[in-house]
Image 1 (cartoon, rainbow, N blue to C red):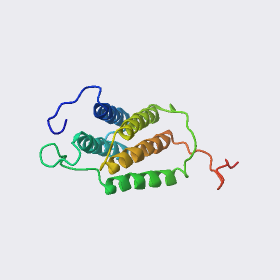
Image 2 (cartoon, helix red, strand yellow):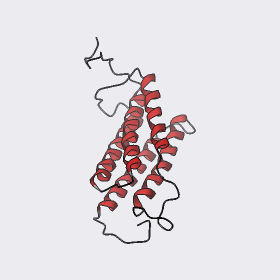
Image 3 (cartoon, rainbow, N blue to C red):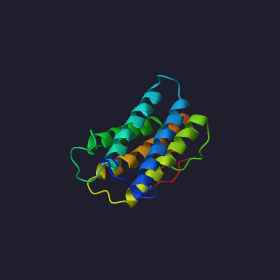
Length: 170
C-alpha cells in the first residue's frame, strides 16, 4: 500500500481503491465527450486529479506520518467546493430534482456512468473502517451528486418544478 506494505488483492482497501480508479477512468470517458478547453472539461480534469488525492489518502496507513503519508489530504474545503458547484449548477437548471433516465446524449450517459462508479466507490469506502478519513467519504458522496447534476446539465433538460411537498407542478 502507500507505506510499502502488502495486502491481498481481495482486501477491502484494494476494492475501495479499485472502485476509485474506475470512477477516475469514467470521469475521463466523460471528459473525452466534452469540447476541449471547455469549462466542463477543465472541471473534470480537476475532479480526476482530486481523485488521486482521495486514493493516496485511502492507501495511506491510518495515522501514518512520513513514508506512506499522502502529500495532500482531502479537506473540508474540497467538499465545500463540490457543494458550491452542485448548488450553482442546480440553480441554473431550475432546481433539478427527481429521477432521470440516462442516455439523452453520450456526454450525459458518460457522466451517469461516472456517477454510478463513484457511488460504488462510496459503498466500498463506507464498508471499511475510515477512522480519520471522514472528509474522504463526504468528498466521494458529493462527487457523485455533482456527476448527477452535470449529467442533467449535459442533457439540457430541466426537470419539472416541484412544490414544497415535493409534488410535481403542472
